[in-house]
Length: 109
Image (cartoon, rainbow, N blue to C red; front, side, top):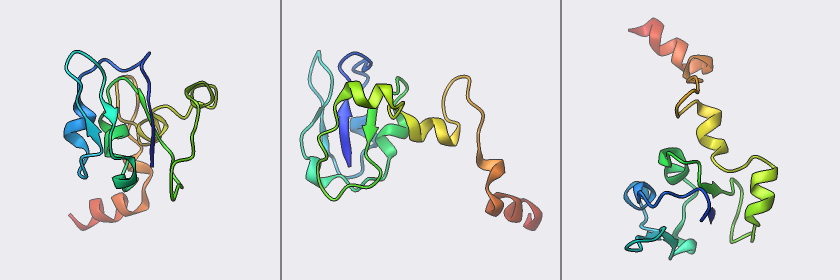
């Protein structure tokens, strides 16, 4: 479940607003998006994946809000951790080649 939109990291690009399939965020003119419908979050990680500033944290296992503090998420390196794990973003290397199904598909084609 989406927990944090970092006011210090967010650039206000609103990509997360566009990427979210369940419309969890509301854009704020001249500001950063707000989590408006947290209970609608399906933990799909699309917002975190597309955030170019690693300004979001989605708790991977949450049936409801877990009230994670931004400071804790930064110290634990959770901000943008999903995006980092799959290798999306500048200076990162894709991890798709490490997926066994990727190798099977490559051989099949």
